[in-house]
Amino acid sequence: MKILHISDLHFPKKLPLFSLRGKAIVGYLSYRLRRKSKHPLVLISAMVEAISKLEYDALIISGDLTNVSHPGEFQNAKEILSPLLTEKTFIIPGNHDRYHKRAVGPNPLFEKTFSEWLGTSLDSKLYIRSKKIGGKLFIGWDSNYAIPRITASGYVSPEIIDKTLNHVTEPYVLVCHHPLWNPKTEIESKTHQMTNRAEVVEKLKTNPPELYLHGHTHTNWVKLPGPNTSFPIVNSASSTRLSDRNHECGFHLIEMEKSTHYRRFIYSEDKFIETNPIFYEESEGVI
Image (cartoon, rainbow, N blue to C red):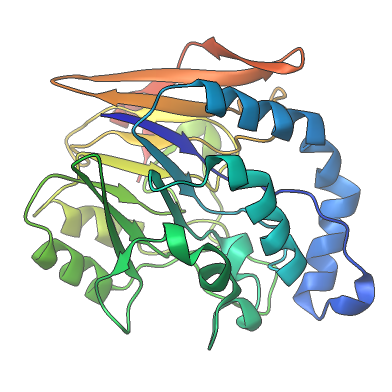
């Protein structure tokens, strides 16, 4: 099983200010002034082209396809990703895809746009999504919620965790936007992290996934199995951002056979090239 993992795509889209409200105005101006240049169109085109040439069994996208959850952004993301959206694709939302209440319900923009690639809902009241690709079971959680303040914290309710663990009776890959672990050099603030991730980690011990895929923090890593999280944790954020001294960006191709092999791809000189993954032991970071 070859799993291609991308995340935090933040596709650029020019939006009229009059179409934005509240938090979205501040978020969009921040994006235009501070972050837009870090996600150039040439890099995005190169990523789509590179992925189109790679062999993989499943394409997993762990959220943040948009910046402020504007309807035009969702449609733009769908158009950019269209060459890659097949039955092999599984997508979950990120906090930027749940930026305000309009993006959450009663007819969520994320679900409305990407319904074909979200898998099957396992509970009508909770976000637990399931999809089998190439015989491998993928479970998707939504750790995001719309709040009026400019924060990016996440939360997964104990009910979601318990229902997932009770339902799953075979090896599975868990996909969620927020990290469960960070390197000591990439510690998240309380306004950015999953607020109950220690509880999530503890509950997962009863039925751990084979692999945890996430994004949110814009630098790549692979956390190897350890005493508290017996499964690898892979961060492929941001797959569309230019790397700098504080951000090692790109995406991963994970080959799961008897042993797991990791390949990492980064943008360099107008194309994506393969380079060494960034590995950590669990002791080199924090839950």
